[in-house]
Length: 444
Image 1 (cartoon, helix red, strand yellow):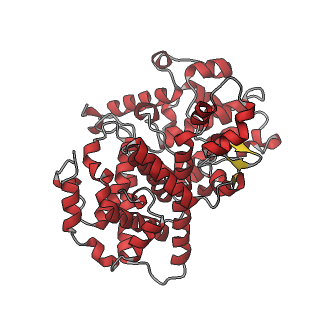
Image 2 (cartoon, helix red, strand yellow):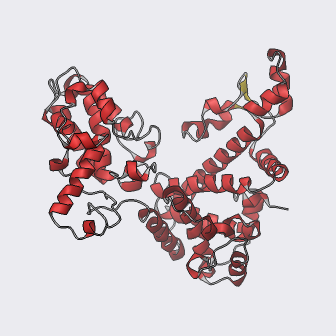
Image 3 (tube, one colour):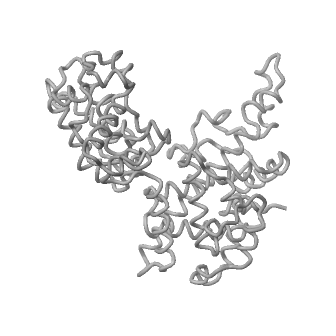
């Protein structure tokens, strides 16, 4: 029988496993049983580099699975098959707690490392459940939900933290007078009289069923994971010095995340990748140069907020967005927001100042809208704790520029070959790189 700790390491079973933990320093040592379980996992690639030898290795692989699955279009599932072998539950639970503690001690709950840890736990639970039969999956979800929910009748306010963090939305839930409806019996009692000429059971399965139950379970555990990281951070503030193993693991976590995203200081890589680097104004398309020269009152808001802000932020931090087609947050590529604060926002504010009249003179609230377009919600200051409250807008296409900001569209010969101002910028970087004879750019 599968332990609920395999899905929810924060369960009573999971906590019992942790209580039986030995000395943290022993978790660096090779563990023959773990190695044997991994090697004998069905479909597992047994190349040496893919085999975790100890708890620390397993913790790193646990996060690495999520990062590579999210970002690598050629992701190989067989390198991580062992993560779906429930015989590793004891090892997996301890590696989960090691990760949370390392992230909490070193980075805290408002970091990209914390977000990656929380999101990876959500995705791993989801992927593991998909491997089970429908009956086993239903049984696991029921057991876990029963332990997570305080009562059969749950008010929507019970999910206040999850809703405020946007891990769950009210529209995901079915409610009756403020009560969350999950069970078939409650649904029939509340809504059968309002359903005409339809089978209530089918409506229940369509609106709730296993899907909503699993979603709620998943988001609750994600929130509890984040809460645990916060508790670790608060406890670490009272301690003189963290365990060196946790600091070592924290560095490994940071390395895994950093290797997955563009690095600063280069333009064109050997595989054709355009990496993040200081902006090159000479490569800007005509429309961007017009914004920098100053916009008249008629189009200044949309030009600065909807057009210029996404262009500048992606051109500086993640120019390969369209080629990679992988969604990231600003902090994934600018962990401390130093580039945002010192380069991107000053450039946007400078363009706003060039408007006629200056944009913020009569509409200072537009600074909040700029922050929202960068993914930090409707707040006056860009802070990591608000990231994810809105989305990081991608740059407008040329067609949208022509439609919404026609005064900006003054095409040159390069414009005829592209469909987005960001693509123009990348092409110009390529041309500049080739002209300067960059050896990296000539490898293709």
